[in-house]
Length: 561
Image 1: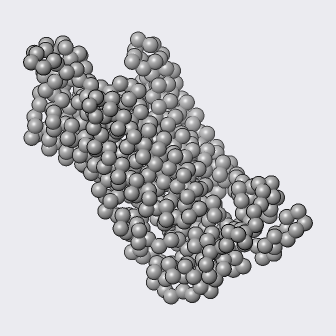
Image 2 (image 1 turned 60 degrees about the vertical axis):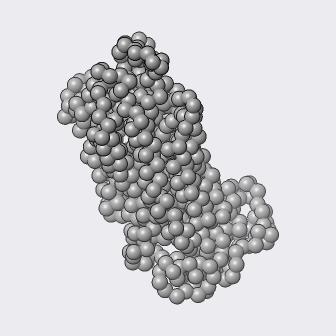
């Protein structure tokens, strides 16, 4: 097993202020992710009213019937694109920056993701154009690049926090980084409520049914959605300096780069203890000075890598070796994250039902544009407070006690159970306020006190340092592929079987049948967890390594060191 005095000190260190600072710094990508996901669903309704309500010709008085029976709304394709491009950008960022984190170092790639998030987060607010389509197109371009930055933060933040943490509380620290999504939801709710609520009082407007055009509330409504999007980038911008000051992790500098002297210097700052290069040198592995010389590293084919033994130094590891010894676990992290996000991102299918059952959001014809944004934000925030957000913190406080595997198995099981009940008795339950809302809330409570958190934690722990960031990025990207299926595939699939009822969407399989498919997805996540995912609670990251062997590895009869 890979060993050094510095790595042993990291595993046994006490919780310090550095860890809490790292949680905040590393968590900004997840803050932005949830903030954006929470607010964009509200703001697309506002954008639809602003840009797609018919305009009466100049110097002409138009009757109410000119504006139609419902407020303006984004065309289906444009509405889907605004959300889809961010998910596609996130998927691309997860793969690219995951690979980059293993190639050039976690810290070097880390600043780029934050700059990308801040620049294009603010850029969203500056989406201008002479036509509604131009505004939406500019918004989509900015949202794709914002997604790339957010995606890059998935593998880099998880791996950095995992490699800095001690083995006793590592799960809680990585979960705490992920739980910044909960903070993002709450801040997104607070800002949307403050902006929409403040402007609707300072610029009161009649509802659509009374004054269709006046209900838009221009120019206040156009300012509102831009301000909400721009403010989401502020917390990330405030952490930029501190992210640059974060030293490279010891696992990268010592195990991957082989720089024992650099490791000693960096960890002296983190652990507030003096280390020498000898203390940081990997036994039998890392050199005392400098990094590995690429010219001195022998290149092996995929087939040679597949034939290698379990314990080899980093210079001999390649994708053949990785897939032979860690491919089983990679199947586990990719498949479970994929099935989880299909169900998790399908929650939008239920929100309109929940809100109508509870009675929190009246028909949009009875509200002005800003009032609709305010009431939707309030309803979504309350549902998140009792279902989504608490689950994050249950994971933080229990993951190092119960274990990742048990929390993930339990979460998938409960999601399968509650989603199955909703599917089996949907027509009856949808008329009952209490049971429907309770089952809906429990599904997403156990998603967050379950696989939504653990699928993020486990890939940051169970792969070797040389592939850790890449493997996490691949796992996360498979999750985002599931999110695209959940958010859009089921949006269309859940439509009524009758084309007249489903219009303007094409006919689907119906919401009840869609719930049955989601139940199956949760069950598949449960099976994949049981079969492929290991437990990593209380283990050192080096327990999953394979970089160093006491004896040289032999390939094709020749000794390779």
